[in-house]
Length: 80
Image 1 (tube, one colour):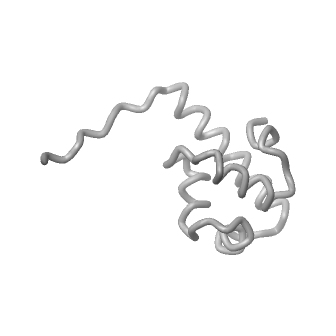
Image 2: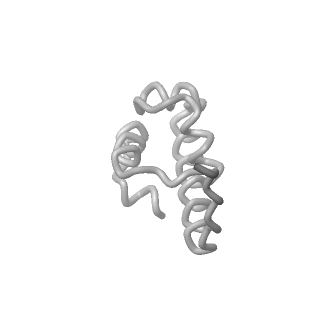
């Protein structure tokens, strides 16, 4: 089976990823947590915070719920 070609990312989707990542980073820093501490509190893999904050992944709803809880926020607050 040949490797799959990466699909082009819709610019609007990428913009949302970037804004979401910036928001998560800002809330995390306001809580005084580094990425490893945040991952542990949220119960996500230690590499996830960096990927989220750098707009490299589309998080699942379950991940967003964990992130919001770890930040003491509602999911809606992650999207400005």
